[in-house]
Length: 379
Ligand code: SF4
Ligand code: SF4
Image (cartoon, rainbow, N blue to C red; front, side):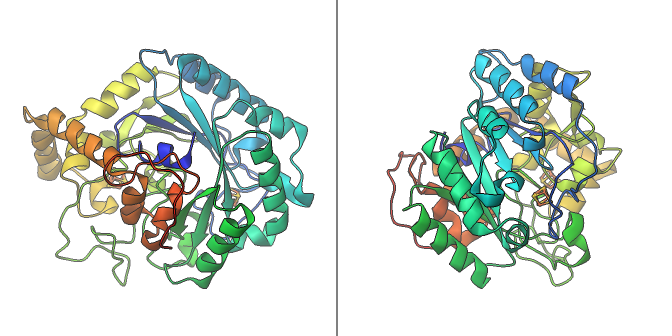
């Protein structure tokens, strides 16, 4: 499964499920949005197995994305969840910080687990490179690619004009001869980066780590102090579409890191718990919640405003999302965004100049909904 096929489904309600497996990670990157490190909680594995085991061919997400922390600290769980998902027709993707790649190796236990997945994405940025050398990561990704796994890179820089992004994207293109797609983002002031990062842009759209508009105005332009501009207009949120299993097993409505980490979850952003609910319940709440429909179609001015929705504003969102045509408008919006393709979505939610790199290697749609072959990009 190509990266673009995953990303283009991101605005479609319940087309994917994001599951964090553990907050543990052998690395301690300075920008980690989940504040992961050697110690941290594991998501309840038995409940997660049961939840994913409840997927059926008739009622399942298209994509199961496994992340962390470092999901490959639990290779047997990765393999088991991917097997259960595959049995229902769901394809599994894994995002890793590549802790295992020292010396350019892929340990057998990791390779065995990844044989069950449809896509593998390697994180790479200046922080990861301090922990695992780039050459080792490239060698390990070559091994995965050669074993038939569809691979991509998840790259992070400080801003659009960060020279690192220009250099690393060129290096990946050269090393992998444009076969490997890239998702490019900027550091956001959440998790460990909250202490030092300025108001960033937006989350990684794979929804792998975090929120969409923390520290930005509604149109994605950062305000100097990280707050939305006073006259910011509401804008629809495409991230309120894939349920996210948090580290404690709670299922939340989006990948905003504060929603994932803060308890209690605002009621309008809580979809259930893997120990208590099944996929059909979570899927139904995701698709049918009037507030989520309103967020997807009308939006709010910022993630902070969204999390704080209450009183008259919450009632207005319920009214908006309960209108007779709200379901049809929501479905049409999702369809149009999917047809617009992954690169269009990433111009808004990723690092815009690098958005076309998501189409490298093929498999994506671009603007008119056509499936494209590999092509030149403008980044
Ligand atoms: S950014 Fe990824 S690799 Fe780095 S500490 Fe966080 S989870 Fe681990
Ligand atoms: S907090 Fe609200 S606006 Fe922000 S990503 Fe989540 S659903 Fe969207």
